[in-house]
Image 1 (cartoon, rainbow, N blue to C red):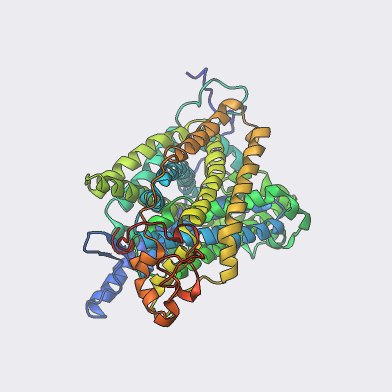
Image 2 (image 1 turned 90 degrees about the vertical axis):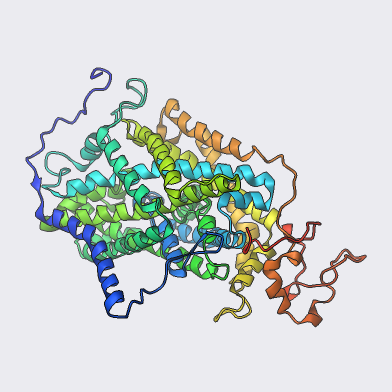
Length: 639
């Protein structure tokens, strides 16, 4: 066995290490700060404000369905959207695609593609009151297998995403050692490649197979899934309490990092590269746009079904548009803020080594957080252990939030499907089964080639298939759900509210409609095609075909799943707009004199007669048109 899998090539001797008091103290402080805050909140509510415990996070509807409060809903979505990719992936995307030009491309893709699609998903989930798999089936039965494919995408992404989060655990442990284990005789590159991954030095000349499982990574992965299970398994109320800490902590830690790092020598050069190096020619490269769109889609994560699922657990009068805008802006702002911290560190490291910022920022690829940033920690002198603990705990908490959301989405979807079949299982059992399954699948990524397999699957599934999913979603919205139903769903949900007594409209209306019909489907469809052609012509990452087969196999499996029920011709279970009881209150508010002649029996000119829609709009828009369905109960009240 030792002949097949030789030990790491690095033979450098580590210097004797000891526990760092500052690093361990910082870690213990961060571990216990959450429970202390909750204890103080409880004591304040119990003895100061006469047993008033504030807003209830989760209530139970008459049908047993859990309903999130506005605050819990927004915190859950913010935690879901702001993840480790905002720090682990975003800086490398910017550094490898021209600096400020990539930031511009990222912002355009966010505003015109990712933000709108994310908000449309929120509206859809609230309107249908169904998790994502059953939501697509309700729109039209042929899209059931699309829901299955989306479930498969989420399952695969969560399995490898958990490994990325797991990498932070040995770094947190290492941050409590003095000196840091990736300093001295061992470089950060060697520590990452040999100690953490134990990867092969040459993928084209190695023994067959993926290599043995690395027990330290496997143990760390087990710890991660135990944390996730106990956070998700016992209901949304417990999860919402945990989310408050795991959302606010990384924000506070990031602000501390920005304040400290921007004052270091060389930080200005890093920031200049980040936002000051603008090359207009870079915006003419399709690869820049493809990478920027892939980053914002992976970061904000429309297309994974979580936005739909979470919105199915809010009040039917919740302003999901407002919540969506808060989440979208917070996600992008955190990425941009994180860029200041990361590029300040990179600039500082570049000055210490006498190299350019671009050279330092791009030399470690997506391992930027685990190689370049780790190396830079040694330059913080006596504060290196504290800064290292702060940085890697921040990465861990960022990842945990997204992991909770994805796992909760999978659990809710399975539970709803089982209940529709007459099967009822406790939430903890469903959660346990899914966590065990994803842990076992994730063991692939703990092997000696695990990181390379992860990179390939991330490209083929987490990027290429995600683009395909977003494209198909936009087609479903246009053909079978419709702009007007989307618009009226939002308007009806906010009708009678304090700030929008007549209901909220899409704003800006022209841009929202352009995004709905043009920007989202064109951008996602075009870039999906570009990425497929690109990886078809040039082997991704220069990896051997045996490794790329993992990516092609997973991608093919996902695409085939989409087609399994596409042949079904049944009509949608949704009522036409005029028969939708969700909109009755909205329509009744319109002056009855202006309603005559818009709905009812069609006349010779083919227009509807009778009741009109608000603003004098007709109903010829995808599923908005009358197609003979019988009126059914409002989906938002009776799923």
